Image (cartoon, rainbow over all chains, first blue to last red):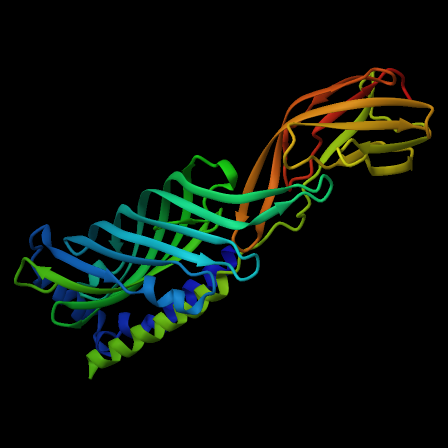
Length: 240
Length: 163
């Protein structure tokens, strides 16, 4: 799995390279960049706020068979164009029936994340950059499972498999890597790739939840992603 | 022009992201999807032993007994099912085709479990109490109470004699 993630990240970084390292930037000599940096004053710590909406939560389910959706917004504070404390809030939703086992699963709930991103190219002083970050996610929700009865092969009994309003709380951590690029003045696009690690799920009776809003589906570590459309509230006269 | 290139590249990378995520989304289901408990046989000295002769095991049901192990020679362990609805199951151990018998009573809690929507559902069990007659068996000990897809030693059957 880790090899898959590594390969995926490398492919994405290579394909995003033209944004992050445009020809104009490459054409500049190191000397010119250094001179620009020297000329640029330090500037204020608080530079602005990125307000983002995630599109990936509605695009991705089109391509997979076990569908779950999410709507997510976030606010990211720009501190010196280097540190980016972020708050994310969203709503996860699924109401699906698996084709193979005819298992119905339903869950709807809000989720929240807090964390921080770090601009890996802050020395360039440009609005387009690669970032690394971390998140802590939390949700509390109830889920329903409606599956065909379990048939006892020896005693011959049938047991209904219906779980209703099963309560669950979940806390998880995420490692984040992504890109953000300016499309036009104060409008940005970007994506992030997330490796999610469950820290706590309670209770775990009846196998625990299959889908956790904000975390995803599966019992172990999962990979997630976001594709953001962003508006930048610039509180300074300079570009980010 | 530069902005359009940005948009084109970002949409391209997003498509790569979706394609890669879709490829990674398949869920690995457990290879072993049989729910069964396991008893391992020991002498009163604590050594693992095999039954000298044959062992047959049947479960007592309202509609008639069902054989789960038939005349197995030199058995050193057995796997056994548990009922989905009863709180206590009764097993008959028949040594050497009627030479001696023991009756085992296994009490358990049944838990209907969602493994995942991709891997299905199953009935898992938790052993709460084990008892037996003592014609050949000395003691039953719960080693691991959880009975699920993980094959592990759930009950130690301690015999009076070394074989």
